Amino acid sequence: MQLSATDEDRHLPGTDIFWGESWYHDFAAADGSYGGYLRLGLYPNQEVAWSWVYLVRKARPLVVVRDHAALCPRSDELLSTSSLPGAAHAGSSAWGPEKPLHSYRITATGNGVELANPADAFLSVNDEPESGPSADVELDLTWTGVTPPYAYTVTTRFEQSAWVSGTVRINDESFEVHCPGQRDHSWGARDWWSFGWVWCSGRLNDGTWWHCARSIVPKVDIFQAGYVISPDMTLTPVESVGVEYSLDADQLPRSGTLKVGNLALNWEVQLAAPILLVSPEGKQSRFPRSMCRFNTADGREGSGWIEFNFPEGVARSGEIGS
Image (tube, rainbow, N blue to C red; front, side, top):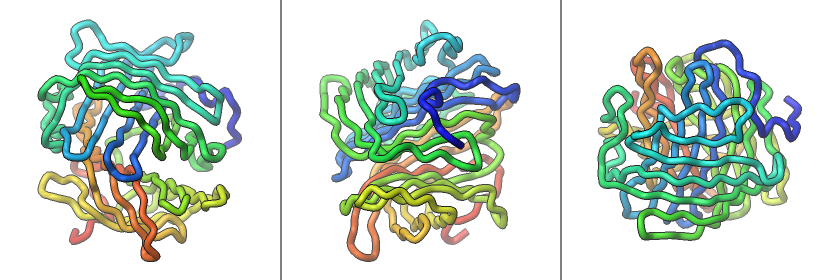
């Protein structure tokens, strides 16, 4: 897929009920002290938008501002979200490139909750908002790419490793952000409840960046894709991704291994930020996302995010001891 500046914008939707368009952005402090991710998903055929702001800090509760019933903006409106009147997790956000395919800025405000036990996110009934102490959130963050975006060949999607800068406020506390991160933009029919996958991105302290994704379906490879960026900023696509992982009693990932082409990584979860996803028909999928510490056999270390998609009742591969 050849990218142009207009690919930062919205695309003409298809007719599938699961057709969606999403913008995802994350950040992870090199020392593991803070991180977060934001995602805006538009589902015009369901007349709804999903808005996520998840923030993690060492020895602090998970902060969640999640709205799965936000207003889906019209195609001629600026890319933004606003909650319906009376929504439990009310908020608004504005998304847009400052320089297409290079830098991207998000501003957001919202009233969410704190979760002392991240696994409580899986307790939501009928996609109702999470319960917990109130958290008032405001942020202004910019992602600046370290290389041009990487366009997938198997689907309509691009990924970009980036430096992230800006500010975040949670209640009365504010902190500056300057750390590695990732962003992606995806559009097409995406059925979250049909099969499992793993997605990951991060940066090592020698200047190596990576991104990868693959299906985790027993005996079937639906897709494997990714890239490694060397310290001299050369991006090399990879077509082979391997993963092994262990889960705790709450079905949250704990640790594992990852191989992105020739880059072999060990990973261990530092801070968890999971989501329960509910389809229009009521199907459920556990979507654990975690900020991790990564290391290599030659002593390099780094930080980043890993996500798994575990649809209910669907077999998956890669679990250690399974």
